[in-house]
Structure formats: structure tokens, C-alpha cells
Length: 209
Image (cartoon, rainbow, N blue to C red; front, side, top):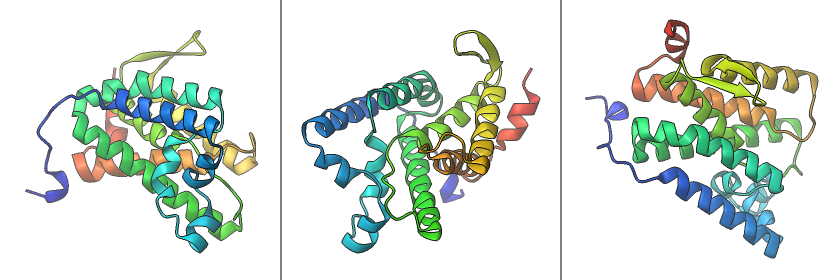
């Protein structure tokens, strides 16, 4: 058996709720001790000069404000809980953490190439784009209401958001939003499905009814 595709024994442990709890705890610590953001957010200079390599992991659990936290955790609860039930908690944790870390590494590389050394990257959005991709693959016929009024099938919503991120990154819209981190999370999620599950997301999107 291909070791990359060796499945975990299925179990469901509400990992999404634990992740949400950790994010909330970190945010509270950020408010009590602002220096937490300095150590947790991903910053190229700190990684290079001070070897803060843990930031590739911790940036996913720190947020820039209450609205940032609430939006991300709500998305994680809505999409992540269903994906976790589908693939099991161990697989979900591997997927979530790996895509998030790789999105951070990719962003670090882009920041270094472009000279954006003073950026502080925070938030779970990179991993969340991967989670939304997984939701669309496993539940391609699910209908979601964007802004509570516009019904879209899950694949259409995910591909639409991804197209918006590409457009925004090219034309520099919504400055301060890490568009490339979001796109990297989506891309690494797609690669994960190909490598780990031998599943092509596009086939599931186009074969849904």
C-alpha cells in the first residue's frame, strides 16, 4: 500500500471544537498580553533572524480582531465539522494543519521574494480555504446561501471565492488581506486530495447534480 495513502482508523473526536477553543484562548491571551501576537504571527524577519520557526504553525491560531476571529471560527464550524465527520478527526487534523502550515511557508517565500519583511501574518484563512474545498468535494450538491440570500452550490461558491481571491491579488484590492495565503491553502488542499485520497476535486465538482 502506498504509505501516503494509508488511511487512519476512523474516529470522531470533535477536533473542530478543540481548534475553535484554542483559537479563542489565543485571542484572549492576545488581548491580555499583546506580545503574544508578536511571537505567534508569522513575520519573515523574526523567522530569519531570531529563528521563530514555530510561527509557521502558530500564525493559524492568532487573529487580528474580533470580527476576524468570529468569521473564521464560524466558517470552521460550518464547513469543518462536516468534513471532520466525513474523514475522521485524525485525517481532518492532518489536512487542516498541513495545508495551513504549507500556506504559511508559501506566504513566507512570497514575502521574502517581494521584500515584504515587516508583514505580520495571522489567521486561519489559509487552512479554511482548504477546508471549504474539502466540503465542496464531499458535498458537491449542498446549497449554501451567500450573505443569507444568494443560493449557490458548494463547488460554485468555493470556486467563486477562489476566483475573487485571484482577481484581488492581481489587482491589489482589499489591501491587508493575505490573498496569496488563501490561494495557497486552496492549492495545497487540492494537492492533498490528489496525493492522499487519489481524488481529483474537479471531477467531483463537474459530476455533481
